[in-house]
Amino acid sequence: MIRLKSALAGSLAVTLIALATVVGAAASQARAQETTDQRLTVSIERIWDRAAHSAFTDLLAHDGYLYCTFREGSGHIPGLNGVIRVLRSRDKAHWESVALLDEAHFDLRDPKLSLAPDGRLVVNMGASIYHGSKRLGIESRVALASNDGLFSAPQRLEFSPEMKSSADWLWRLTWHRGEAWGCVQQLDGGNGKRALRLVKSRDGVNYSLVATLNVTDPSETTMRFLADDTLVAMIRRTGGLPAIGRTTTSSRIALSATSGITATPIPAATNP
Image (tube, rainbow, N blue to C red; front, side, top):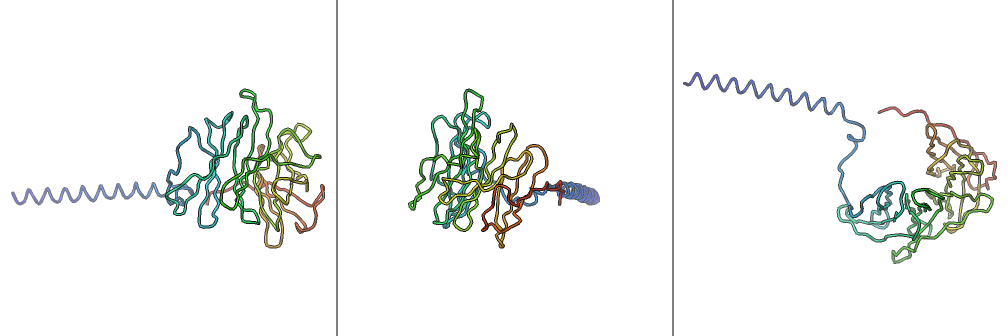
């Protein structure tokens, strides 16, 4: 009987060792197959779920809060009822809604947060116009927060007359030396093709044309200024690889419509 127990114990031990080896090998294989996103993701937590469709988020840390803004609606495109939600949190665990921006007859989308030189929060967004499911045009909107944190109703952005079209979408702002800089993507730049206009503003509402960027099939653009005032633009393209553009002269020098801005495709990315 004792020999039988010993045999059973030995068999069980061998089985457990084999099982541990299989589990360890499977875990090692799973780690080897992890994507970059999986390796870099610490956690994923839901912070809001009160709309049928929530998407296109942006984040900004300011004055001890983390702000999150996004679009709420019934779906992606067409979007007949898009509104913009702004949340904030001190501990990144408990979130409160501080704004719900809407405008009758417009689909508001792709909100972007920035901080004006006077410390006010700024939300830029697109405003699509629909007839049924057909989009007739796109305008740009901005909502500015007051000192008490309350946001204004969305205001229409005004652009230089020489650059206006039926689809003028200022996607994201970058503030530099007291001015708001951005790129307006136009679905029809006057010749049936997309165009990208570099603009700037003192008040975040009225924009003047600085230059037209020579980029094929441009779309959303994010700009940043380097320490030497060089302006760098990361440009999404609808017909190929993204592009990166930069000024060849200091941004403090007024750029003409034929300014030294060049854009070149970014090589295809490789997995790290």
